[in-house]
Length: 237
Length: 164
Image (cartoon, rainbow over all chains, first blue to last red; front, side, top):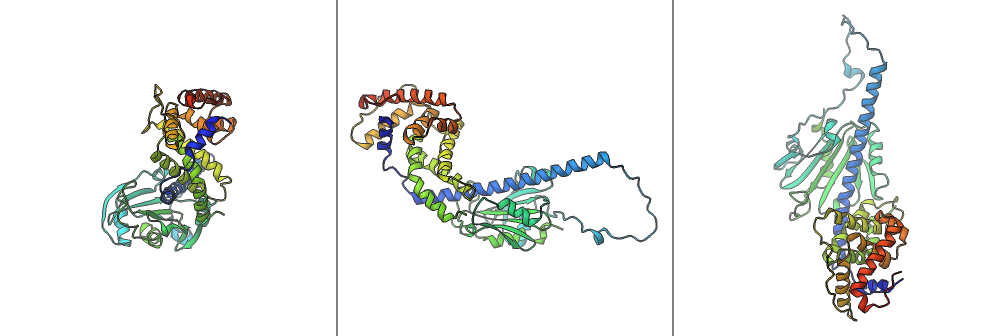
């Protein structure tokens, strides 16, 4: 094209990063984190959208359906509601108790617990919390109900994003699993779409802060441990 | 389906080219490595069957990440108001690199991106415009202006540097 093209090629010919393997390793680590954030964002948006549709439907029904007059309670047999429809599961663990509940499942010392912004998840009754478990940063997000079914929701979140990611049946739900998760030295996570309609994210980092320096070793919990936390009965009733 | 192994192969193959573009855009090897790493991280995050052309995506991501970082104005140099006297361009690659850095440092970030895309990567004008959010006319105008400034620094040693 011009001599400038030659100059640019001559000047950069043979240039390469000092440590390509290290650069690649760091890129993969950072890319995995970006991917997890995107998955969490997609799931949160879906929950918000469904909630909005629900609110709209209720509003429309409220405007069109006549309001039934209150029925006086008379004598007669009563049937417990649980006999016909199961009560909707509710989160039993309050904010501020997430760390303690985590430690009941996997014993350890909990410090520095606080609520974490989680967008619409908060408005719909879910929440996110992070804390230190034995000095390792742990993040737990409990997202409210979704309506596609646990398996479909899991597939929707993982679809098309990564060839090695699959949905695996676990106790009371479907977990999104990546074949590389247990090899990550920086962070590990479990994302479980529970049959009860909630989604649990449990993540552990090998640093005391999200962008802090890494501690000595990889996270001491593997994906199975994190899924054990995510599927525990302690979170719901 | 694309596996992590395939990503590693892709990254190793593309890394030198990405790094060379980053080196010219950023002006120092450390920031060039950071930019290359961030670019590959973003490619990794999207890696999968839906990513039809990873090389093009990586290229686009590199330039956009650079421009975005420049707009944040967090930790980068300002264009030089006065072009310093550049070192002599001789046969030594190190001298040439220093001279080139001096010339590129005089450009605004977008102009620098135009130069790298047009003259290193040989990207068509329309595509440069799409990548940078500029009209084709604006790309040509910026390319000519940038070339004139680069010529002011390197021109003595590159008399054939054309304004094409």
